[in-house]
Image (cartoon, rainbow, N blue to C red):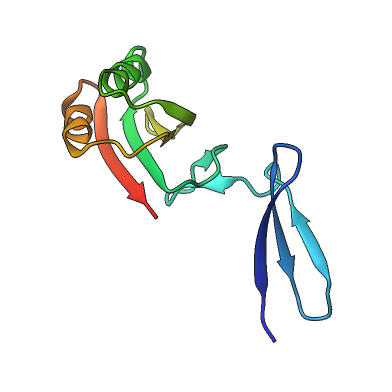
Length: 122
């Protein structure tokens, strides 16, 4: 007895399929069950080995600053999503094409409008 969870990609959409004893399957769409961060903020970025989570002031120019700092370090953004929180903040979830160097993470932390920067790795 137990549960097996499988990930599958169906037409550019990630589907979570749960296999129960007795071969009864369920499908959870991203519309019904979106990816959430630890605070419950929804995102539309599938998980990858290296990710960066940035909490920032919700104001113009912050996304541009992040893109500029990553671009100067030759870090390309493969995927990114931004969600607003209830307290005039926003959260960016970035899937870069390569790990972001520690010095660049520190530059991001020191940039105007940035509240926090977290690097996630598998």
